[in-house]
Length: 419
Image (tube, rainbow, N blue to C red; front, side, top):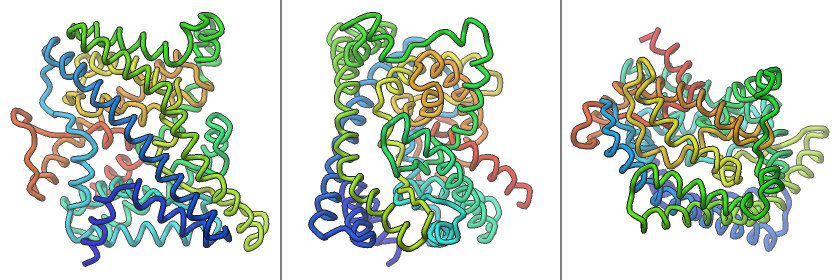
């Protein structure tokens, strides 16, 4: 019964149940019912808009990506099948699922109460990420305590990183009271921030500044985010040697994404701001001097023009890395259209510098490919154990989203020592 309820919630999606969660939080924090209801509906509308634009961009880019892979004859044995399959496998990984779900949820509340973290994570859809590490360890060991402990430890670490990175999120994106406890995105803050400081010390390179604002100032109308999206999308499609119609469609889609996504995020934030303010007032009344952040999916920030531009530049870069990187067996495919989620912290520390974002993002993607390759056997085994059929011709399956979770990966590798 419990899992039927969970699967019902997951199938309905964030645009349906996130408004309910926001409504409940608003009422708990003291908002009037009418305001809480409006906030929830507005958040749901924002999520629908964001998901529509991201899906549109992904569908358009996949045509180009598939052509790039076919044209340049990439031959690697572990196929990137995408986060939806990895998520489905995680949610289907047996008796460990409900235990991890309840444990992580209760742990988060307790950690907020005792002051260990300021982040209240309402992004339950991404609980699949700790479920994956827990399911993998449970498959290998059959040890429930080890599996649940590893999943909880991964999330506890991410809550702290979300707290640490929240001021950057607030300043760069202008969204106060929101943190991003998203394993595949936020863990990279611990690497991206120091790397940006290293670049500050490198003569010449430190002076290269390709922020959208400065590009626009120098190039005028050609530097506007939508025009940059148009140009980058067209170049990417031309490199793939697709037909003229596909080139124009790709160019227009990337231009539309650069223009529309920030507006959709604005709608989302319109709904979140009353709840965030109410949460702040609630904490001051109940726990004087304490702060509470509402933890959300990285989808609320990936629409920034500098992040989209950097991710587009990293698509061909990642394909080249896949071929030349020693030890890599991952063929990046399904998730190349979603690189925005992995490279948020390649861009944010430099305040939107696309050049630095590309440079740091290249290092991120090298690590992600190698972790994805190492995860391929266990993901394939876990998928087979729950009856998943992977793409024909793939000797193994993997996922860049799994590879991006380096915090979980280290905990997973530590856990295997006890198997």
